[in-house]
Amino acid sequence: MPTNISAAQRGLFTIVTILYWTSMYIYVPTLSPYLKDSGYSLQFIGIVLGSYGFVQMLVRFPLGLFSDRWGKRKPFILLGMLTAAASCLLFVIPGSWIWPLAGRVIAGVCASTWVAFTVMYAGFFGSGGTGRAMGNISLMTVSGQMLGMLLSGWLTDRFSPDAPFLLGAAVAIAGLLLALLLRETPSERNGQSGMSVAKIASVVRDATLLRVSLLSILAHGVLFITMFGFTPLKAAELGANGTQLTLLVFSFMLPHAIASFGSAAWLVPRFGYWPTIAAGFVVSGICTGLMAAAPSLEWLYVTQAVNGLAQGLHLPLLLGLAIRDVDGSSRATAMGMYQALYAIGMFSGPFLAGWLNESWGLDSGFLFGAMLAAAASLLVWRWAARDRRRERPRSAPSRPKD
Image: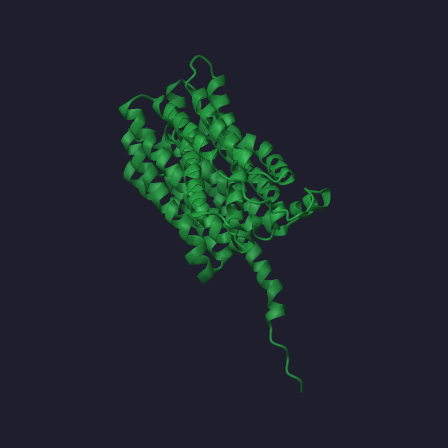
């Protein structure tokens, strides 16, 4: 049953969530050009971009486990807003390569607290409403990311390259103050003891969780190679200014937001989970590969619009499937494991693409991203075919007696 949460609290949670993502993504479109203009190599830029996912890979699962043992979500939301402000401020400290790296590392800590956000919001809807909850919170995520990324180029052009970081810190502090007003929902344990070794083992062995985690590693590898990684640098090489970077972000994020909200509500009831997820990976892989041949900004806008739509098809569905079959008292652990595993893609995708870009040029990283999407498509096809074979004997009509 849905938890008895007031509309005011749901609205407050929505605002805090949007501010959380805005503060983290307000500098993302200008980050790789900012670092390159500061004199850093493409390989170092890849390390900075990848450190964000590397930290999450280490922190998210323990954080989710601790949240379940403690039965609390709000303290981690407060930690997320605090580290969001700190990460933005670290970028504007001059004089050493350590500061941008430290800023992105702390941003990884901030993003790790997303475990608490997702589980707290899922608790508003009860176990039967997980798909709807994840569709809603995915829309909040994309809305916050889009708001921040749309401001990024304008702030850089209108004020200075440091302006996105400074406003991001201010937004995070505002979100921290509002998050203090959130009320912790009743514990989902219903009198159960905290996480045991047996329950952890049960979560870790969940077949659906393992499948969607592997797919999400590949999905986030593509995402953090493209729009959240080197796509803005590709646009800068094609002559984009801050305003044109804003248009590039808009071309990606608006279709992404629409697809994130609609995939679970409209497409899954008609086509099923696996076909919808597969379609997202196939189209995303094609668009990512085409970026390598982009002759103009207009071409790049088109590829990003379709890519945003495609990635919005599968990312919310994978998020919802990660905790669909997990009981309430173990959800933060399952979500922490899921998010820790997909952080491998957030780290390894831009890290390997940065190495490829330094050796063979910027377009090689996009071709690598297309290969990741192709691998995910093949996995989805294989698992869907296996599931159909398993279900066929059960659904086959019994043979009539002679």
